Length: 459
Image: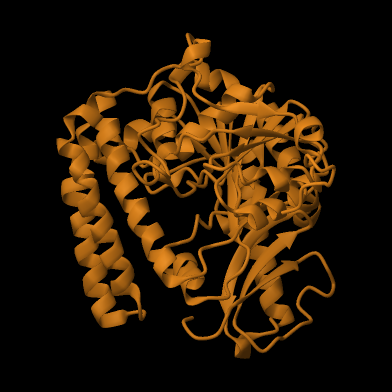
């Protein structure tokens, strides 16, 4: 998995020509039944194409898992276990033996017809014009158009404007104060719909993304939702190491319910909120921000590093809220291509994770967060080092070094008492005009559609 690029293949198991292409490169095969993602497998060229027997076996396993996880009479949705994995009330053998399995799978795979007009889509961006354009193109292809699309430009020089002008339905907001949490808060403040969905500028969303988000909030009494994040490409070693060694952004293909019970079960060891999902694919009811506040501006890219999303989930679950992981809501993420950039990302992730643990301890007094910093993470580093020495893969020790660097950098937040005294404010309840920061909304068709010389902006 280190040498050749991996081809990311999409295989519909309901098609009679599911795997006709052998190819001459390793592959990560993502299996679907129509628009329902089922699972994925990594394979070398000599294992491809998959035999008919293999495809039948995959279909049986995936179908059984989906039936067990999605059928309400069988106990769906499944509650997340301690490790954030599904706790099935039905064995795969029993599910496979269910009558009319294919018909049931067809029903489960039916595309959502829910309207997304009550959804605001917020994309925060900084100095990634070409990637932002690709992201916006994918949003423009949604089967159910969202009520509004807001781009929050977190760059100093507002360089996302020329991109936004090409999309007349996009509302542009410039928030020059650095930080992803600051930008996301600006997006929430500028939005008007009841559901606020977030994705990133290095993401392409599936055509059914907004419709599936709408369906989930209609069918479930939840305050937050996360979805499946699949790799868009695996061309470079850095991308493959992130996906295969670091786990990417998760690989669970059945829905999971994260509730207060999950929170209490994992609380003694630091509630495992990072297993809920990824900020590249998440949504909230507006009322959730009224209840627990917005993203902590001390956390996230441009500040402590990351984990502004998981810290908000922590607050939400602690307050009795519920979050659903729904893999029907699919996005495709473009992982970092270069090795130095990947290592910086890993370092920032670990630094931000430690900062979030400190924040959660300060907010709730849960000792499990401190134990994770001082006990669980060092034990993880030691286990990973020993395994990397004897089993590899090549480059794993370099990734581990970046994680340790991030952990060490994060320890500073334990003694930065001024930083720790700041608390997340419930800004929606009593935010005045003077407190709203410097974000400015610009109507793209009116203010950005032309230069002063009359020519349209170009990226």
